[in-house]
Length: 456
Image (cartoon, rainbow, N blue to C red):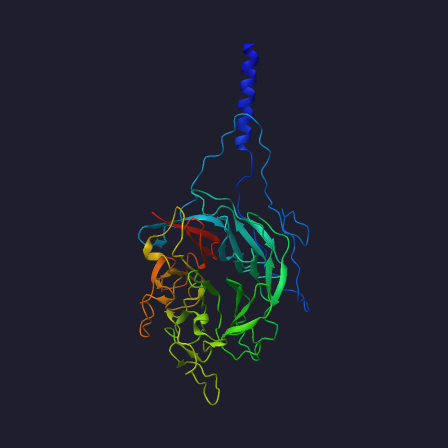
């Protein structure tokens, strides 16, 4: 009897040991394929189902991972929580902050935090990725494909608490992706609007941008669409613009025009205002024109004119493009926030003033803006990448523009990516997002790293 009890105990112990070691293994992140252009004439591309999705076309996807039945009796011990690896030691964080590598996704671009704590990642390919439990106390899950679209780059992504849907943007298409809270994959993407429906500009210099960014404020969906050149007069009214539409994609109109590449879109959660920033034109004096971050919705009109390619900064005529008479810059916008030339602003987010969670930033950062700067691709001097912080008072920068010094309005929150001597950067920030527990995340499309930042 004693031997049988001992044998039973050993069998139970062995089962517990096996249970605690089962589950998904490690390994590198899946490699993302190169973007594939849609065939000529295709206007409503269909989504391609991703591995692990269990939804029937036309229905909302169900989570790819569901809980397994648990046997009765004493539960098996789970794996010991571990901390993610520290970020590159060359990076310099603002005093009191540190960063870890929460995940890695090839070509990571825009980020959006979902209500359950997962992080959705746009990429330079056709696939959106999801990082489960991104703002967990220690390690979250591993990045995995969320959905693959039929064209790329799928760099733009946002979420609407009004419709409960995810919105993504590729080269020519705005997509609505039905979302069930907690789902880790989707198989349905509905094309609801189209951009870049016309030709590139005549005699384009070849600097044709293919990314589109999206943001949501209330019941309005915004799309930032890059230009078909470095400096030209567009013939397609959707290029070099910010478009606005309903959450169904209806009634699309132009909110802002003559913005060369409005990649960085952010909504102030306290006021609902939309702010835009992006990449300015090349081949002008290296210190000018500055690159800007501004709110077209505060202007109270449509077709807000940011002046590109002729007029920049404070109504200054920089590039008349041999037009006669020269363009009139008096009616263009003088932006509210300015940055160094060639900063290349890719992603931005407001840090909510009422943010809750275990990792909420100090009061001085709440209500302010974090911006991912990709840096310049040429030099010298180079404009190094970084993550900026801009303190705000509602919809007004804490410090007004100084047209002689574009550095006075902001500080470096993360730096150390490189120097002004060359472009041998160790990373290039792109998207930025605030996690459900208050951490800040930024993506890096050079290394693929998703960096999570917390206050010590």
